[in-house]
Image 1 (cartoon, rainbow over the protein chains, first blue to last red):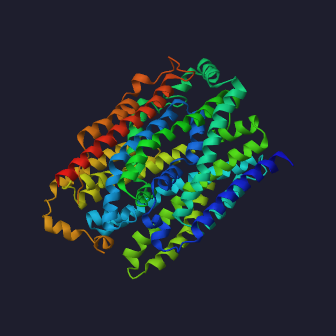
Image 2: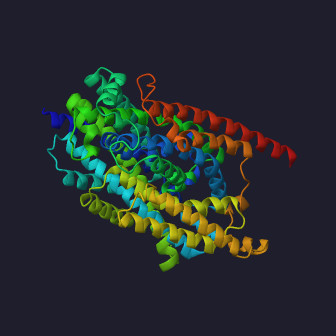
Image 3: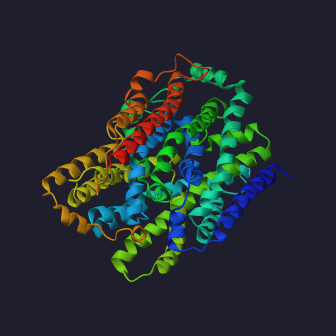
Length: 491
Length: 74
C-alpha cells in the first residue's frame, strides 16, 4: 500500500470509530428538543469534563497553535495564558449561570438575556451576534479538516474537495445525533489528542535535534527574536498580549456553545471543580508549541503556517503514525464543529425565528427546523472556508472579539441589581459595531491594542453609564419581568 | 435575580493568576534563564498553569466553607 493510502485508511478508520460511538450514544434516547440541546440536564462531572474539553481543544489548538508558533513565534504564548485565565473566570461565573438556568429552565444564552432583561429584541440581537461570530470558529474547523486530509493524502486530495467531504460527513452526523453523542466521541478524541500531542511534541524535536532543550538552544541561537514578543511580527507586543489575553479570557465563557454546555451540568459545584482541574489540560498545548518551534528551522518557508505541524510530521514519521495524528486532528475538528453547529442552529430557530416570526411553533417543529439550519450553516462556512486565507488563530480572535461583547450583559446582569436593558443593549451594539468597523477596515490590532478589547471597554462604559441613568426598577416590577419560573421545582 | 457575590478572599485568589500570567508580561518575556531546556517565558507560563489550579483549589475551599456557614445560619 502506498503511504497516502495507509495514512488515509488510518484517518477514515478513526473517524468511522468516532461516528459509530456517536450513533450508539444517541440511538436509544428519544430526541426531543431538551435531549438534543442540553442532554436532559443530567451530565455529571465526567461527561461534563469531556464536553468542555471537547469544546476547547479544537483544530485551533492543534494546527493553529503550532502554525502561529511557526509563523509568529512569541505572541503564540497568549494561548496558554488565556485558556488558563478563562477557566479562572469560569470558576466564578459558570456556577451562577447554571443556578439561574436551573431556576428558570434556560437552554441558551439568548434565554438568559430574555429572562434577565425581559426584551425579546435584545434576546434576538444576542442570538444574531452569537451565531455570526460562531461562523469564523466553524470555518476554522472546516479549514483544519481540509488541511489534514490534504496533507495526509500526500496532496492526492485537494483542499477544497477535502473540505466538501468533511462538511457533508459533519452535517450528517449532527443531523442524526445530539449533544450526548458529541460528549461521548470526546472520549476517543481526547485520548487520541493527548497521544498525538505527546508523540509529535516529544518525537519531532528528538528526531531533528535530539531533544526539546537542544531544539530551543538552536532556535535561540539562530532566531532569538522569534521566541519572545513581538516575535516575527511588528505589532503583536506586550500591549497586544495583555489586551488580547484579557479580552479572550473574559470571552472564554461567553461563546454561545460554552454557555449552553453549562446547562448540561448536574450541579454548579461540578462546574467549579471542573474549572479547578481543566487548566492542567492546557499543558498539552505546550507540546504542540514545541512542534511549531521545531518547524521554524527544519521546514522554513511554508506558504501557510497552519501546515507546519502536519508537514513536519509527514517528513518525520511513518505513514501510519501520520494517519493516527491526522485522525486525532480530524476528530478535534469534528467534535467542536458539531457542538458549534448544534448550538448555532438551535439558537437561530428557538431564539430568533420562533419569537419574532412564528410564535405558534411547537418544540418538535423547532427541533426539525434546527436540523435544516445545520445544513444552511454548513454551506455558509464551507463557502467562507474555501474563499478565505486568514490564519486559524486570527479567525478565532475575530470570533472572540465578537462574543466577548456579551460579558458586561452577563456578568453585570448576574451580580449588579442596577444594570438595565437600555444600557446593555446600547453597550452591546456599540461593542459589536466597533469590532466590525476595526476588523473590516483592517485595523486590528489598533495602535497595538486588541480591537476586541477596546470594543469591550467601550461596551462596559456605555452599559454602566446608561444603567446608572436609568431609574431603578421597583422590586415587584422586576419579578414581573422574570418569565416562567421553574415548573419542575413546583412539581 | 442578582446572585450572591463570591467571597472576597476567593476573588483575590482568582486575581493572582491574572497578575502572574497577564499583567506582568514585560517582567518575564525573555529567553534566559532557560529552565529544563525551555525558554523562560514559556517555562513561567507552564509553572503558573499548575499554580493556577492550586489557587482555584484554595478558592473552592473558601467558597465551600462559606456555603456551609450560610446553611448553618439559616
